[in-house]
Length: 281
Image (cartoon, rainbow, N blue to C red; front, side):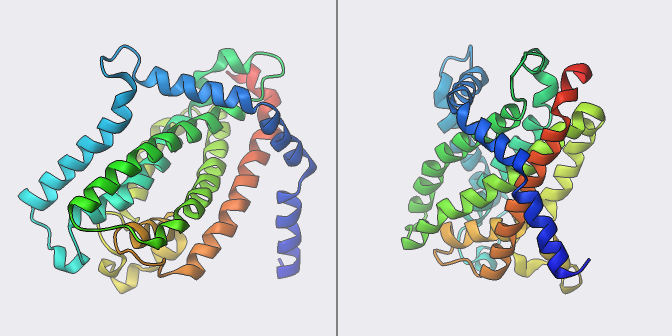
């Protein structure tokens, strides 16, 4: 396909009238989305003594565990990282957890909420969106915990953090598109939810989270160019841990454009299939 034809095809996909109508529905049902997000957040810790405080305690405990394991027991070489290894790890692990939880929960959201899908006029694309947004809230609640640990290790945030909202928007668009597509596929292929956990484990290990990009052998660095999460995670680590602007702005720009296309594609996939959902679930 010629470049002009490719751009034209992408343009038709992004500006599909049906897609615009679906986005209009999301705006129309924004109160329903916020209500379902709050329901999801409350349901996660329903019956527990500390309740919503676990949204702060979970990342805190996770941070303590990683600090103990990697800084005390394994004694990872901080000189190769340029600072405390646990802080480097958690700077990438926190956004990855948002991505992972959204994918795993959102992909089964249509199946798990068949009673809502079967109701007339209920837009099913709301359900994966709620999964992404509720996990985004947990990500936001984890950021102050990360900031406290960074300060404890002498890593003071700089003006570079102003770029964090941009990274969140890019990741949110990409995550939402993937989640919508997987939620649709899972309606017809139930085995997907069993395969997905293993795929995400592989994706985790080929994404520079527990190791820096510089540690990847030259022959395998192509995986970082094919992995849209790699520039995003590296950008989070650049801003939060290294206190600098992202070192791969071109790759990040490509991921941003790709995220828009994936979000549009994910919505299109679900819009074209949603009328069949009541019969399938």
